[in-house]
Length: 406
Image 1 (cartoon, rainbow, N blue to C red):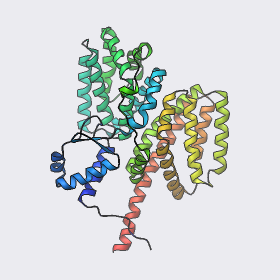
Image 2 (tube, rainbow, N blue to C red; image 1 turned 90 degrees about the vertical axis):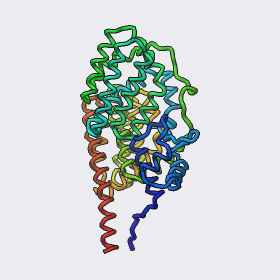
Image 3 (cartoon, one colour; image 1 turned 180 degrees about the vertical axis):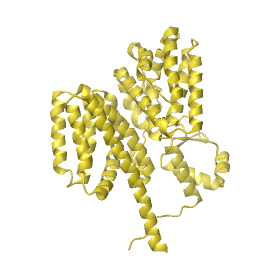
Image 4 (cartoon, helix red, strand yellow; image 1 turned 90 degrees about the horizontal axis):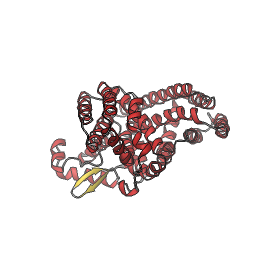
């Protein structure tokens, strides 16, 4: 007999769910405390006892940390990524900068679709403030306003995983960005060109080339290198993050946004830099996937994750290896869950496998344009089906309730 899985939460549990959604929706930045207990209790119209129970549960689950008497969201992505990103920044700073340019470009595109009027207003104000600072000669002020603009753009994405990944990048890139702005402070014409390029962000547009030209100098010339001591990170438990993600389909979609954005760029770069030995490895891996495409969803899921790892290695950009290694527990389990549901709905993996085949063929042919087009089609398909599966889950629960309670 089928029973309802719907659980009626008490006040503390309901508040915990609301705060969890706010945390994973990117409402709070980890280096800033969330509102005081009094303000939270007033805003949510709950007792201090219910609030403290909810906060204690989030603290235990690793989504919050306590600093003195105030609560901060745990810097989960920085905890997972920062140690390895420090090494990348020390040895390959220009590759790190290239990845940041791409991620910021993608963030502007996401913000076009997701940003609310209040977000757009904040982005406009941040652009204005940064452009004003570029007229001066204080590099520290320029960087501070540049960082503020970054935050407002990533706020407009409404994706905790994207905003915190970006914060992890910025934490290790700061010495290089500061050096870039020191160079700009010495070159008014270059600062003016950057100002014009930044002005496009006010219109929710982005031109990578002029911004890359203006800010790359610090990464190419700076001797300042980040250290582990300059980055605040700790031993976060990735399993806790996976459990949170798998419990809520909305967060599953957010993880896929980060993953697929990274994989889009990886396919493009892999098609430019893939080597002969890597081509053989990709083809052999794809052949193995073909053999079990419709017979073993769980095994195919692992091979799916491994395929994208191989493509990332073909870029010869260590940033991809860092992100894939740090998030592999999240990627693997979320992929397995998604493919299992997809298999139940579609009866086979033929569409997904065809897309994987086309992506590999484009990389092997060293065709960046085709690699990007085929990856875009794959991303659109996955996200569209994620939303459909989420809707089907909700409808199924309602159907069960209708049968049991009428």
